[in-house]
Image (cartoon, rainbow, N blue to C red; front, top):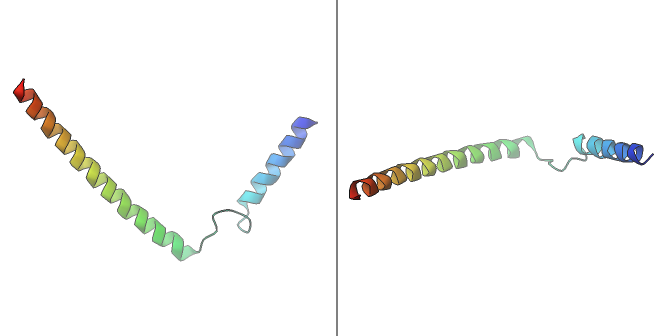
Length: 68
């Protein structure tokens, strides 16, 4: 009986969160588009910074190898 109650309760929560009227992430369409563009820009910045860091690390490791 306890398992059945837990299952029913979990199902109710899942249904409630999947409904747009009750979901936690209710935003307008334009706000989602704007966020996606900002995320894309941030991803590009992160990728560029990561690439620069890797390049610098490779350069530093080559210098260290030459010193030894």
